[in-house]
Length: 319
Image (cartoon, rainbow, N blue to C red; front, top):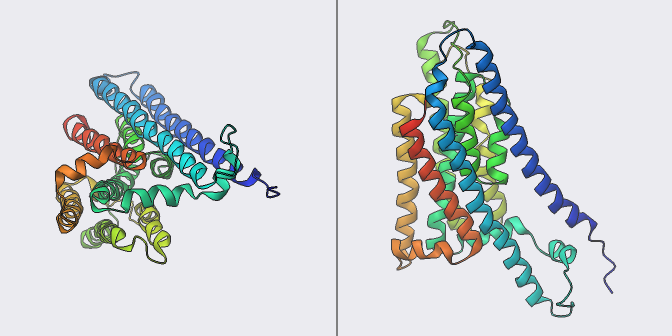
């Protein structure tokens, strides 16, 4: 007889789902707040935001698509995880759902990431999502300063709880619907402001460097702690905002920054592809792994949606 309570694991899982829904609602509220404020400010003059209606529709649709694709596979992962648990515990009645016992015996976060990193073809997808998260973290912080969008950390947390592509599309909507707030006149020497802005590049470089080392840490002691490092570092640019001079230009929106962004993604793709060929695989094998495992499918489609959304932003977005 099992005397151990299942209340705690059930509460944690339920709390996770409630958190995901609450973060989504909070981010949508920020988006709507920006739209309402902009409408009030532009009610007496020609509204340039009318030309952005098409972009708003595009990124709204992309947000829906990214949520639908990534979480279709996420729910399949939950089902797969339960089936694996049931096979390992044949003593339990197969006709009865044992959610509490399954959640008590399974660490879903660890199981999901382990599934996406155990081979080079799977890591090829995971490395890219680390890259998008790192690049987006700087863009997020810079737009928070440029447009004074409140509580931007909610978007990053949503990305890590739900999907980077879904949260990115909501972020793009927030940017579209918030006006730029003019920066104050510089009170610090230009050289000091420029050197302060370079810290965004430093944070991105550290994030990317740690991300490239994640696959090599798989299966080693301390793997989960190492895995958490890029997740936590993604909030660092927002923290850096508090220490930046208010007159400093948003570094992450400049043309040189776009080069840094491209180099960061190239580095992760290079490392991931090199690991592929070291294992005797190729890009064709990596593409086939997209539907090899539901956890890989969720991350893989997150990557595909990110590429689609970021290309769309380069074509339709504003800085």
